[in-house]
Image (cartoon, rainbow, N blue to C red; front, side, top):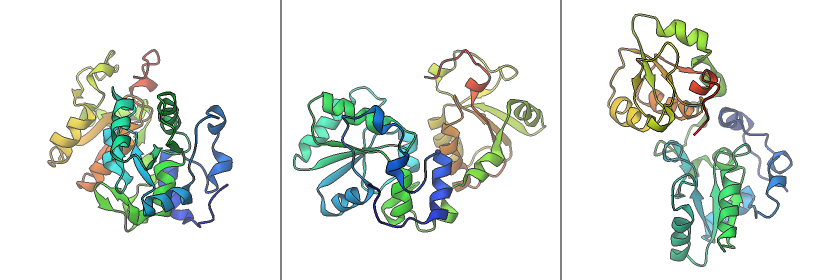
Length: 271
């Protein structure tokens, strides 16, 4: 059942639409629960109660980039995509044997919470639950227990980026090409090295800077603010998180390629 707590609808729209999540009454709108019938789930209010009284510990299973942008205050980070996930989760559980574990990711359309809970169950861990409405629902209901770029969310309408704001800087390939031809433009290939199996047509000389290094060595240092930054990633998803850093550091002249390199390189597999 959905919890009875009333969630601010405008706040919820701002963040959930960016993450492509669902409406407020989540339980009836979670299409992937049926695909993981053996996975135990924990609902929003139940988790908050366990968070408050210490019966639950919370584990973020997303990438480091996503975790560092926004997370539940006090959540541990164990990346599902990294080697040794189960061993790290088991080690964490061993430190707090009396606690249940709630794993979360990006909400309604994200499967990592289910997959990590399923992997844990298959490894003999019977105390792991999927918090499948994830960070969108939590941040909507409990902003003061949410950290955005290391800061408490105190004004969601100002701090969170809306879908309309994102769409303003997401360009089709044709428009991206046109903007990239402008005098002050600099094109950055933000894919990881392993993803660069093919060059993007017309952008063979794009500056290759993986997202983590782009944030650390360029954006957080305020470099290239005099340029119009044209940035593309693999599938057009990670730039959503990158935008938070750009806005936070005062960048205003930047654009992303909608759908990333894969939208153009149809044969390239997502990695």
